[in-house]
Length: 252
Image 1 (cartoon, rainbow, N blue to C red):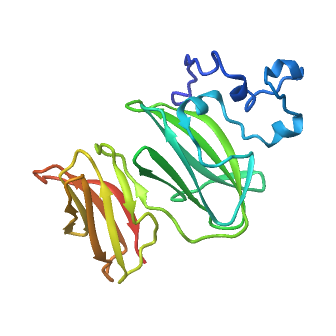
Image 2 (image 1 turned 90 degrees about the vertical axis):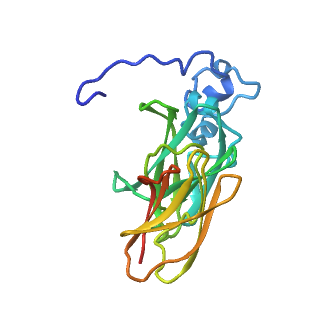
Image 3 (image 1 turned 30 degrees about the vertical axis):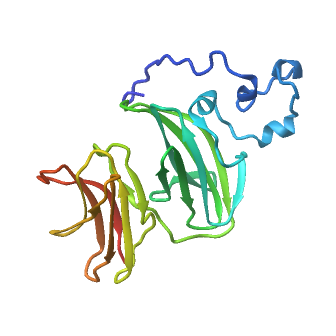
């Protein structure tokens, strides 16, 4: 959609698909048309999450054996690697009375080298739909490539920091990845970033710089002041003329 106008877009997602991947989105009535060495039943197909072939092209070595419906407590994570040139985005929606409500600050992607870990937390017991979108690096368009459901047995107050787009290259946020931060509590702030010279904790007019090591790793042990309600992480080039905000935390 471009505003209220629909536009056709050419994609090749369904060309030359492996049968073992196509079975996640299409179930032939004729068993022989599955083209699988071991065909699956309709009941087995009903358990599979609806993932389109692009998911399998982009996502490598997922840690979880995802199902259409996955039972968890109040938090969970999903680890994976990605094909070069792509990144994933997850949208979490609470499902109540046939209504889907998008939740904010309930998913956070932690990067560790070539692996990515999507962390999820759920505010209460219930059903939560996770929609997966893929982006090509440098492109604004995103496309859905699958979805699945988490069924949470309890709720959690834990949220994740709010990310902002930036010029950061190979950014890895290591800690903290949870909020709200507690006033008066000591936290270790650690970030790895390839193309910036400065990282700072920012609140009000205060800029507390993190210490940089030779491996592009920045860190700082910092006690959260008792007179603030939010805190930000910023990055800057060597001249430090201005900081780009990369994360925002709520404080309580």
